[in-house]
Each structure stands twice: as structure tokens, then as C-alpha cells.
Image (tube, rainbow, N blue to C red; front, side, top):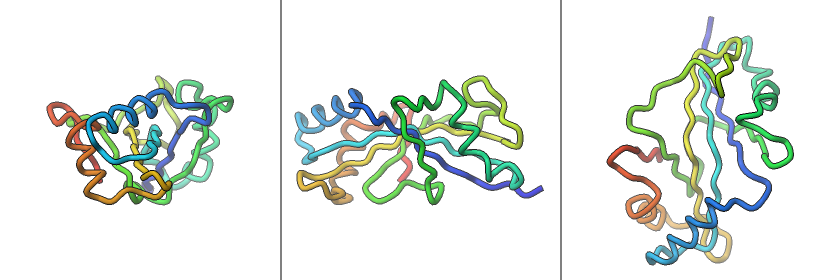
Length: 148
């Protein structure tokens, strides 16, 4: 059976204290940034037959998605979008379950953190600004890797 990769972002619809703290820290260390967006990114290796209903299934997993405070968005691919970096552990391996729950048709799951940086006008920052933020704060190369 064919296996597909499906990627979903789970972001907060309420104020994100972690993104706010990152914004303040990046500003304090001299990175020119006007806003920071953060989301958990879940990439699934899923059987083609189960792919169509995967989003609905994810929305029922309380440890991943709470409709009172999260937004679930299917991403167009399995790579970061413009102005974004994904942070993952060096020893990243696909897990067989999500929040302790096995999803029928899912062969593996990876969780990463997406950071998107915007300038003061709300536009995506230049690649050099994002790279500076990754090198100075967003990624600890001792145990994390940045996926661009």
C-alpha cells in the first residue's frame, strides 16, 4: 500500500506566551523582528487509504488539539514555508503513536516546532534575519537541528 506524508500545524488562537517570550528575547539580543508565530508541526507517514480523514482524527486527540484554543491547518507540503524554520531534536525518529494513541493507517509521526518571523510591517523577514535568530536563540545545536 502506498504511503503519503501529510503535515499539519497546530497553532494557538489565544495569546502565545512562548512566542511572546521569543519575540522579546530576539529583540533584546538585537534581531530585527516585529512578530513571532509559533506552531507545533506534525508530519505523518500515512497509508493512502487513511490520508483523507487524518485531519478529522487529529482533531479528536486532546493532547494535540483543543478546539477552544487551537487552530488545525493542513500544510501544503512537508517543508517549512517562507520565513519559517522548524526545530527538531537531532535524534528525531518517527513514533508509532500520537499522545499515546495509535492512529489506524499511520506508520510514523514526527513533531517539530515551527517558528515564523515577521518584520515590523508584518512581512516575512529576510533570510539572513531568520538565520541569525536560529543561530542565536531558536535552535540549540547541541541537541536540536533546524529544518529550513
